[in-house]
Length: 284
Image 1 (cartoon, rainbow, N blue to C red):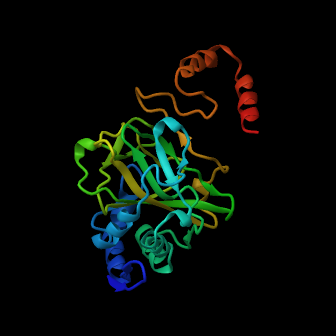
Image 2 (cartoon, one colour):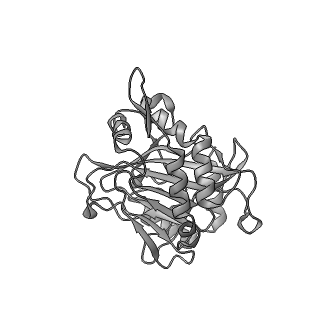
């Protein structure tokens, strides 16, 4: 990779020839991968470039992190550039560049990819010890850009991450009977996968990393203007799924903690319309 100097950090520039070589090597495997199209690429970027990003990565108490969905899952996110260091910003800009879009198109066969300059739902993610993320399909529509979500990219920043720490990205089949790919979130591993209503993924097992450590990643999403007719559905938010022997899918109307058991009982005896009304009132 070619480097360029800056007042505050050493930045790298994406190597388009190396990316194209990677895309050609991985393209057929991407399309044939189970349970849905995906690719796992190790040693994806120059390690010194990612270590700069890791040095800048905010700790849980350093900034006002966004929380996602069920708060018990302990997922934190930041998409605000003002909360990111210069090396992090430069990396995100390059991953939204024409050079990188051409790599993704060659890898996936999806033409006309469009990046999200707002990093909606993406940016910096981390999950603390004992945290988890239940299996789900992602939101499918960008309301600001009015575009269809087509690809997820996850780039992991976890050095010396041991198998027993967990945090595996699990890719589940559409019947939700089994995870068919378990991917350890080790440093400089990049995962790209198609986003559809049945690309079920998550890391549902609580993290067992040492205290003070967290599962860190960069998440970016890519869009197109339209999508194949067979993949079309109405715009929706995250669709949490029921795992075999797992907890009930997350319900934003369900209160956490002690009240959850009572809530499950009431779900069985109270007409559903009452909960629909309650959820709408809570959302006002």
